Image 1 (cartoon, rainbow, N blue to C red):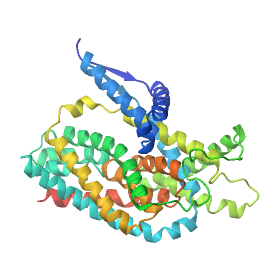
Image 2: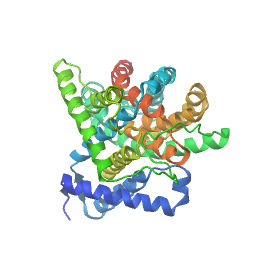
Image 3: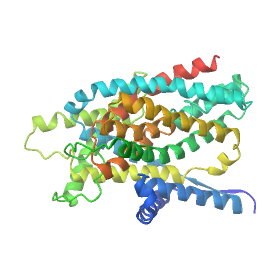
Image 4: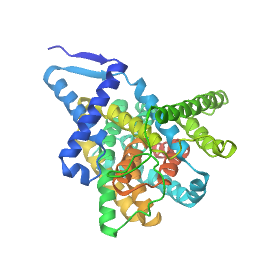
Amino acid sequence: MADSVIVVDDFLAYTIGIIVFFIGMRLNDWVAFLRDFNIPEPVTGGLLASLLGLAIYLASGIELQYELETRDRLLVYFFTAVGLNARFSDLLAGGRPLAILLALTLTYMVVQNGVGFLAAQATGQPTAVGVLVGSASLIGGHGTAIAWAPEIAANHGVPNALEIGVAAATLGLVVACLLGGPIARFLIARHGIANAAPDGYMVGIPHEREDKEQINHISIMSVLLVLHLAIIIGYLLSQALDSAGFRLPLFVPCLLVAILLSNSVPRLLPRMHWPARTRALAIVSDFSLGLFIAMSLMGMQLWSVAELAGPLLLMLALQAVVTTLFILFLLFPLMGRDYLATVLSAGFAGFALGATPTAVANMTAVTKSHGPAPQAFIILPLVGAFFVDLANAVVIQAFLSL
């Protein structure tokens, strides 16, 4: 059969994403290994769906391409919900962990590119490939890899830079989803870590939790109304910043607006019911993040990765090993060797090899089983949203100049 492309429209892709999520949830119920190692349900289902897409391509030459506009909206929903849950007291308490995590992240960008640089030389690849399989595609993700690919292709002797960058980002996302949970499980078992159980839930509702808070259509609609108001204001702020030449992903202004609203409106209107840290908001957060991850993973085109196997796989395996060692011997001790450090370790694995949503999914899987960690869900997205892209551009340019 001749090669062809089937484009799955956005609404159908959204529906398939829900099915994929439920498949992952059922598999996690059946397979104890997936539960014990904190593999998120949407990761299980999404990877299975992407493997099915690969099988269809290999058998028939048909490529499945999903339209994912709804997926991107779900990311905005999720981070706005994170902002609504944020308290200034948590942010102030998170000042020192935030500074440490930022310093570690900046350090790791240099380490990650250094590993890629040396691995490229060892495998006989152009050294610019090391940057592509470094922070350009791993910490940077698909967007950064795509942005830098033309420069690397034109000026650094890597004509297939785009394919390498996208493939590395895709494989990195898979590894990131699978690595964070096992790292957290190892740290909890090794150090006998227990959660201090702060109040409220930032994202997920813990497994086996009994809660008398009522969930009905009013509580869900109240959450959606507040989320939409925050997103509208965040969108206007984003437009203003864009006009001023300061571009940020839409979820960042929405996150900031939600934080400001959540720390001002309840004080100004004390009789108003505010949905921060409620079970209804946790449900909306879980829904948004779960479907975002499921749709992202099911849409991976693994056949494009397969064409670039060999040295790429070796380089990514080395990056995964170095990331694990960095977390165990630097990040976890410097963050305090406590439950917050454990949750951030799972998140950093997702962030360093994948993307901020992957990091949050890893942290959510851990906190569902072991209890909430509010600071983690504030400081890691702040590091990922504000500091990484700018610093990454400087680091990438420095290594390309070598």
